[in-house]
Amino acid sequence: MNGRTTRMGARLLGSALLLAATLSATATMAGPRMLVDVNTLQVIEHEDAFQRWYPASLTKLMTAYTVFRAVKAGEITLDSPVTMSKHAAAEPPSKMYFKPGQRMTLDSALKIILVKSANDVSVAIAESISGSEPAFVERMNAEAKRIGMSSSRFINPNGLPGKGQYTTARDLAVLAVTLKREFPQYASYFALEGFTTGKKQYPNFNMLIGRFDGADGMKTGFICASGFNQVSSATRNGRSVVSVVLGSDSLGARADISAGMLQKGLTGRPGNVPTLGQLRPYGETRDVVADISQEICSKHAAKVRSEGRDEAGRQKLASPYIHELDRPLRFVFAGLLGGGDTAKPDGVETVASNGVGDIANVPVPIPRPTF
Image (cartoon, rainbow, N blue to C red):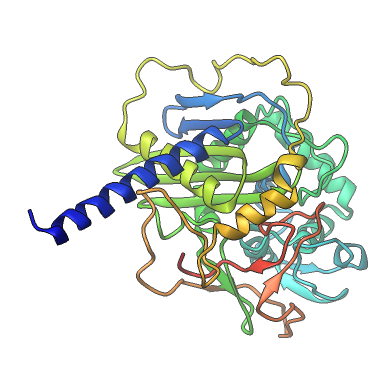
């Protein structure tokens, strides 16, 4: 064995050890989680599944479900206009900065909230369907109760934090599975790689779409109090699974953990495990809404997240199941009726410490198509 081969072997061994250490570290920092087979409803994996948690922008999955129910009932169509009100336009970031009176189709509005997590557009949707935000939220809660989300309560359609807003990993799994089973015709909304307004492109913050084999959804979300959260889904060879990961410490960590869980669900055999309906509540603190703000939004945590990006500002990922995207992202149109785009220019975007989005509360580059 020559010196070059020895050095190469040492580098490969070092890389493997680093990967193992990274995956181990991200796994131990995860909060509640859930892995479910969509077809059999078997719970393949769960941890703190009944612990109440701030839903952040995962709330928009409930908003989308409520919208689909309204469309099914014939109350509205995907071509119906959604008008930005003064109230909706005043919502804090993440947002599109559309002006009061500007309009978009419901189809465009759904794409925007599921990719960009736009809080202003979420409220505009609620008002356009139910006449007011409170009326829509009441409907969200009624729908949640109807499908069996036994420990969830929503106070708005976008996930901005507030007293009385909470969910659980188990309930989010129920919601995700219900979306996939009841409304398969709308599955493409959750698998978008990004959208364009015609003037600006917005990539999806879900780093599994296009990069994990079979990934087909669903939604990400972040606030300081709940950390970095992700509901994911993937399908291979007729098998479909949904994972829920709450409380991760970065975009990369939630993607790595989600990828590992999905891979397990798609390739393993669950054996004798309970179904979603059979899983009984557990956990001594489950009725208290967790708040991990100090761990997530400290100066030290922000510094660590900044160091988790490369020189080009791309998120570093450790999972061997996530591959580099070898083609340009596919963007669909989602913009205003009649043209116009008031969104802020490309570059960096910041979110206040109580904002909902997928950027940490320090300026960092918006995620690019590759990482």
